[in-house]
Length: 361
Image 1 (cartoon, one colour):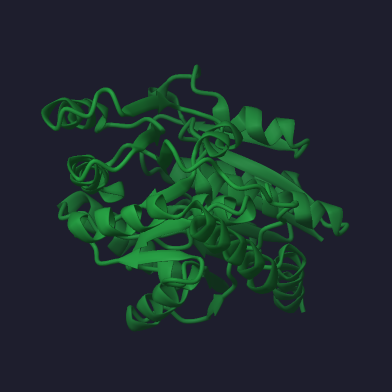
Image 2 (tube, rainbow, N blue to C red):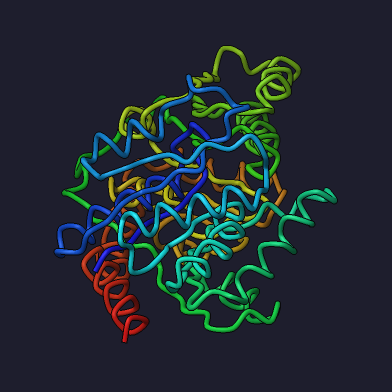
């Protein structure tokens, strides 16, 4: 059996990309041949090689199909050509651009298409709404559509998407740090693309609220993106320069080495890989109660859930962690145990293998 994964080469490696690479590695360890095919938009330039370098570092066969258009039948035909060349049995697409082109390519190559839904942004933007509509149409032609969370499983079914199967991303945690993190200064970190849906404004408002209460804490913002200037401006307006650091792109391991707790205050999320990485390290998580986040974070057990866009509630949860390093460590270890118990890496791989085999029958 051979699986070809198709996704867009944005040049960056975030949660969806890391999860896809880990899935491909797990399948290969199970004796299944894999290949990762990247849609490369030439207008973005060839200097952004983070993704292809990460795939190569994982020793997974990878190639790129170039295109100068956002959508192109010629691109779909080229993808189909590669599928035949690789003798693929199944095409597994990730992301709306891969889903739409894969829908056409899989028909040409006469093989089943599977898609994993990592989520939409739900921006109040006509272009984004059009892309979501197009994505839904593509899903309806897939042999299977994989939802990672209860939230997206319900949403897809409501949208009329057939053949939906929920398979949460698995994770392979090593031993957590297992040590008490220093209580002063307590470092809160947020990691991800600097974009609208991540709601960094809520994080900074809560930071200002916390500092106004004379709570000793520092704040780390990891990642890069289109809202960098706005975030820097808000840091200045709130007079948080001495307590806040923006790292730009940073490796996940280096980021987690520096924080005491992870904050994720997104407007919408599916099953964010960054939360699982924190849980794997025994780091408590404060999250907004949106999308698939309640699947991961149990309020008062592995961290705290707060209402969306409520910076006062977020500041209150942050203060509770600052007040007791022992309680924070206990929450982190409970998260580690939940990850091991409910998000097994072996089960994740086995369920994908079973799904692929059922389609080939």
